[in-house]
Length: 440
Ligand code: FES
Ligand SMILES: [Fe+2]
Image 1: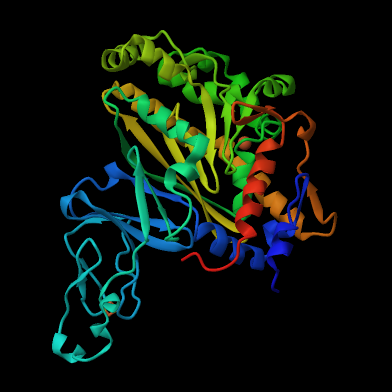
Image 2 (image 1 turned 180 degrees about the vertical axis):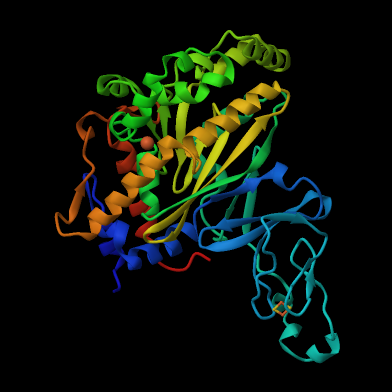
């Protein structure tokens, strides 16, 4: 099947999308070429590769990559593929070495991907190795850090990183600004979840505020049954308080605001109000944290930083940023109906150690394989994916709230239960999918 540019953009309108955008391998292949081989995508944090030779296995769209620190601090994003016969250069999650040595015929490369040695070099006289590019591990043409968070693109041309981030850059700023030292460090390992559904289902659900009271009803009920735990101070009651927060009434969800930006990025107001998860607290840990932040930034600026109270901030196409709990979730499409979600936590340098535990527990309770809440969402994604494949309407409605979207200071604002985020995500999808030709 081959669809023209017009046909791709015809699969999503302002008010409905065709179910094939979730199920058709041809659409998925085009998304990989037109979105994931062109857009700026998050690949890692500077603190994960602090010293020369430190490397991290990551992904850039469809390709497995190595983020590696070279001489004088220079970062490279190398394809995990030997230029000789194509073997995967590394297999571990991370490591440190001034040379990457291919396990097959032992060619070695420096952190910039240049060939530095090989056995029996005389055998290659007057061969393909005369071509300099044949001696170089392929690398992403564009790599740039934004306040320590590293983004890359397979495309040599296209919007700059600041242009691409647009209005959602505030979420990264707010995450980093919360650190008294002005720096964050990645802590712990990565959490990974797989689901048998299309990648877009995760991005749509992360700011869908109709579903929590229904999809997460059993977690809310379990938390309500444990009244004592909900009143515990400190992190002991945190998970119960998080589950209780999903129990807002539909009208209360609607009172939150959705903030949409050009480029398909979306931010939602927070709904964590009580206990250790509240934005402002008066317990001793928070007081020590506030004093550290105010000591570094001044009291007024510290209050301003902490007053930004958003929950999921989605950087289209595949990153969810939680500034308040210093977490990043990356949505990695593996096939049209298989998706991996990888999450990382960050510690606020200069903040009390207890703040890091709050962060780790947040991500474990909200987005790990042991999360009661995440399991509910994954179940729904798989139900949707199975539903799309069956007989029934070809078109899926995304028009809820369309009549009340309004523009305010460069943002599109909508009530919490609007489907504005899905409309914005598909507007960006149409934009990128309607541009053919190679960008690499
Ligand atoms: S495949 Fe890497 S050295 Fe041969
Ligand atoms: Fe959910």
